[in-house]
Image (cartoon, rainbow, N blue to C red; front, side, top):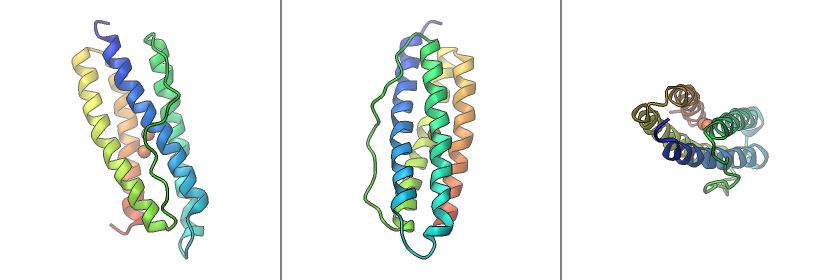
Length: 140
Ligand SMILES: [Fe+2]
Ligand SMILES: [Fe+2]
């Protein structure tokens, strides 16, 4: 592969974001309160578990390409204590994820890395599901 280094950097940036949203969503799972929280808190946990799988798939691909999977999370948005506050912060994170994965799919295509492109497309589909989950929570 001609361009492993830049693909590894892209995958590590995405992994750093996955590590951040794992912490962010698990935090929201524990701290949100209010009438709807009991019913919906589990959804934050469920999404966080999918993000753990993304972080792991990215690490395996980075390792295969000869890179070192990052252990440093990107910025974490915590502080929201209500369901709507948490869901709004998390929807913003998911909108950003869709944007970044869409761009990364294209970069993998340009690099000629078909397997990475396929992995990123599969993750992108999950991120679109997450957008839907948080939109639904917000009644959008
Ligand atoms: Fe993810
Ligand atoms: Fe996500």
